[in-house]
Structures are given as structure tokens and as C-alpha cells.
Image (cartoon, rainbow, N blue to C red):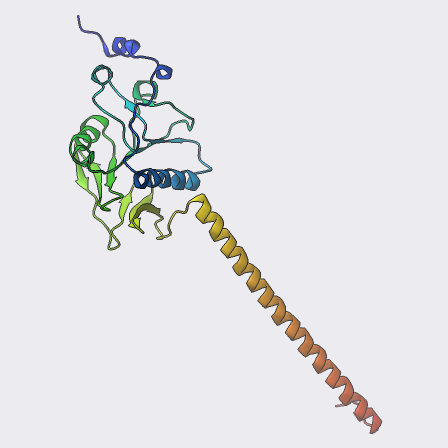
Length: 248
């Protein structure tokens, strides 16, 4: 007799028993790119508590997967409308059946074929993940897809080569050989260090403007005092000649 979905779910291991089982990143380029994607979005959404970012973390989604151990997790994924807290892995049946809203794979020589084919089909047909992007830190190949009906359709790039993500509300684009986020206004989403550096520059610019304004005000004050002194000298000369300087 076949088991029901509820009975199968009860047979699934508890989330606390499932740990991420992902290989190391291919290279330091891949590691730094992944770190960049994580810290920039965390910084931008630092006041929000309703999302989870997975970085090189296993997604457990079926009993068969647990049996075969034939699938490894995405390099980067985002789940929205969920609790922001640490997790050992993303266990779908422990997360109200939620799958990622967005996935980014970082291509390498050993993973590119799987990322472009097997994983794309999995994310499209099983996960039903609304958006899927891939990027190569080595060749800078960059593609994006959005789920339209039952199939992924390519996201058309802008003239800068950026692609709009509805899930992020941001553009993804390559700058200085790195995949970065950009706002609708075209501003790059900074890392915390870049934001701090920008704040220092803005502070220095503001300080310079204040100093310039202060210098201008001082110059105007000195000019007024000089004019008043000249007026007083002229008035005194007029009085010495018997002329009342206050008379028209």
C-alpha cells in the first residue's frame, strides 16, 4: 500500500539531522564572487528580517534525493518571506514547502555543463524557482532566466549588459569582472567597506563645502566691516567741514 504525502513527510529526517554536504568552491575567484553576492545583499537589506540567503548550501527536497545523494545545492540562493536565522541546510519540508525565489550558479570547468542543463531543468521543473542566473568568474559568461508559465525564458540584457531581477528589485550586471547588484537608478549596491569609504568621501566633501562657505561668510563680514569703517571716516570728514552727514 502506497504511503500518503503526510506519511512520507513523517519518515523524513528532522532538519537538525541534515547538514550541508557541499564541495569547496572551485577557486578563490569563485569564493570571492560568492562572498560579494552575499555581503552586498545582506548590507542592502540589513533592516529586513524576512529572507534567507544560502551560500554553497545543500537544499534537501525529496526522500529519493536523500537515498541517492545525487544532487548538490546551488552556489547562491534566496528565499523570501521566511525567517532570517542560521540553518545547517535548507530542508524544504521543514520550511513550509518553500523553494528558492532566486538561484545563482557560478560556472566552472567542472560544473558548467551541469549548471546549464541538469540544474536548469531541476530549478525549472521541480523547484519552480522564478529566476535563475549563472555567471563565470573566469570567462565572465552571464545569463539570466525567468520562469514564464512552465519554462524558463531568457532575460534580455540592457545596453550595459545588465539583467533585471524582479525577485530582487535590482539589476544584476558585470562590472570590473565581478557580478554586482545595481539599483533601478543605476547605482551599484556597495559592500559595507565600500559604503564606509563612500561615507568618508561624502564627509570630506561636506566638510570642504562647509569650510568654503565659512570662508565666504568671513570674507563678506570683513567686506561689511571695511565698508562701515569707510562710511564712518567719510562721515567724520563731513562733520569737520560743518556738514551734517545725516542730512540729505
